[in-house]
Length: 417
Image (cartoon, rainbow, N blue to C red; front, side):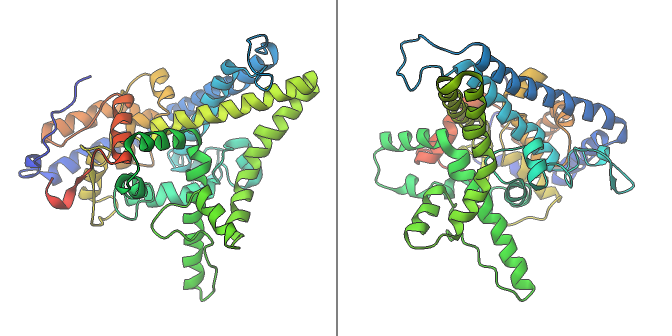
């Protein structure tokens, strides 16, 4: 795959026609937001959801029909089915990164409403709202309402700024600047990848949701303290546990309520189904397969998500910018990285997160729109000399890990990089 030669001296900035570049980007946005695309956009979304469902229920069918026995595994692993786990993990990742992600951004709002009235399931005001719809639409470790605050608002509209809750350099500062041997740093990153959705993402999204509620209560003259007390650093299961040792249990309670639906389904209900089918051995097999599926989906999502805005060729920002401004669009490009793009099968395995540049410029668009507009966006960037970083997801994973352990450092826009 060819990419633009990246100039770290910042020379590309000197004669940039930002207004002209942004005008061409807005024209592309307008074209792909036209109503003529709505029907095909929703059909495409339903196709991706069907693929996810086939993976999940196909995994359960494989677990039922092909128990992995006689493989000389320890007794407690006997019956665990890696094929079923992979299928289930792929589906769990897909329901989050593609269906839940783009629907909760409002990518299908216009197609799922008429005269302000919601007419379809895939409208952000309806999708995954409340316990029942969370369970039927998108059940994961994260509370959808919390993820909406942390991701859709803070991360997207403060990308790469200090207020971005997913700013890797800041979040990993202790590891980057500590005295830990480098091999130990790499091992810590590997361990994080195995558990990151429930260890980091779920509690940190809760922190941001409750911080917003605290601010809203203060404006109304009320007091509603946020129990996740980690300041600018992320909240994790570890910080929640540390609070409990100090006698602070409110964050523990919120975290348990957040975890309960997904945990009860994956690690209690599914083993119970296995028990009903084949007794204690089947119950153990279903439980261990569910555990493996969760580990796999953690690793899969870590590779395709944590890599999106990190690297020594990606910018971070020390100042704020106005949403939807020319500068906002520029930051979306130079603060993001794309992976290999094109083709539903390829994009499905990337969780459609291989279009981060287009997605961060235009957050409320459909998956199909990003796929179709990407070559045009890249061409306009090349025309104006704006860096457009696009590499293999595994190359970007190397960039991510090196930043996390302190071997690489991101560019800073205000330094003239």
